[in-house]
Structure formats: structure tokens, C-alpha cells
Amino acid sequence: MASEAQQNSTFMLPQDSRVPGGLAVIELDKSYANKDIRFNGQKVWRLNDDTDNHWAIIGIPLNQKAGKVGYIIDGKDHDFTIKDKAYKEQYLTVKRKHSNPPADQIKRIQEESRLSRKAFMTYSDSHSSKHFQGFLKPAQGPTSSPFGLKRFFNKQARRPHSGLDIAAPRGADIIAPADGKIILTGHFFFNGNSLFIDHGQGLITMYCHMDILERKQGDVVKAGEVIGKIGSTGRATGPHLHWTVSLNNSRIEPLLFLAPASK
Image 1 (cartoon, rainbow, N blue to C red):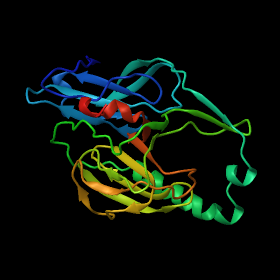
Image 2: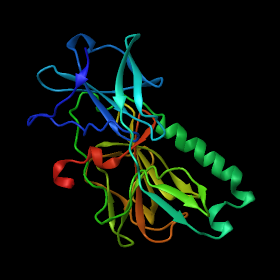
Image 3: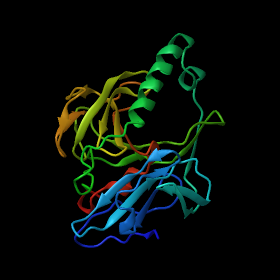
């Protein structure tokens, strides 16, 4: 049977937080070690330690309703319970041109959305044999907009904030929080200069509004290496980093992945 994992002093796990936009860290029976595990049709991140203990790490979508939800191990149904969470709300009055994109940019935005979805859907076996690296914080500065913030423009509800905004001076370093491979870069209408890193097994991170990209698509990066500089490209009111963490194509609270020293 599966049970909630407890972190010990010799092996690090992401933080269990069974709420919308959170993580279910589930310890697995050894008989499930090599079985196929899926949630919402997506393959699930697997971790194991040196003593043959195994965990499934499930990313919970921000729009997931509270209550029991199912996941599948080798064709058999299992479940865990999600608690509700009330995220902060923000109401803004903005000019129409700032709340809705111009008509001549719609095709571009649709193509950029397609590329982003494809990147977030990436599942590779890279780093599957390694222990979890607690994330480094990719930029130094205060949080200017928290994950999950419910935003209303001119009283119209927009999608909740699917990342974490870190305010920092223009030109400050942005680093890779963990090892990975850059799978997409580009200049996007909303997100400006952006970069996506594949950390393996469906764990993808995105960095937006960068002033300069220091690395290119296809590069392999190590934790702590500079990948770009803080900027305000795209739709941004000032220099900051928008940092998104996605697991099994669900946007997750980035703070759940930080190493203790980075919190």
C-alpha cells in the first residue's frame, strides 16, 4: 500500500503539500518499484534512495478540486486526498490595451502557447538515476508576486499566477536551480525572453522576462550556472524574474522544491 512519505536526514524529498498547486509525496511499497505510475494520464516522477525505498512525486494542478483524487499503479487504482487552499486575490484596473493583446498578435501568441505546452509536456529519463537536488533559488530578491495569486483585471478573472515573481535589479544573474537541459528558448509576446529547462521525469522549469539569455536551446546546464540576466521584456512593468515549476504538466508552488539553505 502507498503511504505519505516522511523526509529523513539522509535523503531529501520535495515538500509534501496536498493542495491545488502542491505536491503529493507518496512512499511506495517495494513491489511497485518498477511499475508504471500515472496521474491524469501523465507519467509520474519517481525517486529512490540508497536503501531501496521508493517514492512517487505527483504534481497537483491549480484547478484541482478538493477531495479524493485517483492515480494508477500498473493499471490498479489508488487515491489520496487534496485539501482546499485559499490563495490571495489581486484586483487591478488597467487600460484595455494592457489587458487584451492586439488582434495582429493573436497567431503569434497561439504558436508560442503551443510551443510552451509542448515543453511542459516533455518527459525524459534524464537524471532518473540521481537523487533529488533541492533547488537553488534562481535569482536573489524579494517575492513581488506569489504563486497561485488570483488576479482580476477590470473585475474580470484571469488565470491564477502560475509561477513566482522575484524582484531584482536589471542585469542581475539568473541561475539554473538544478541540473538539466535547455529545451526551449525564445522571445515571447507575454513572457519576453524566456527559457525552459528539462530536469527529467516531467519536471520542467521556465524563466521569463529576461534581459539577456546566456545559454541556448540544447545546452546542458549544472545547478548554479548562469542562464541569463534579469530584465523586463514582454509584458512586464519592471525588472523581475517570473519562475515557473511544472511537474507532470501541472504548475506547482516553486518553494516546495527549494533546498533548506535556499529558503
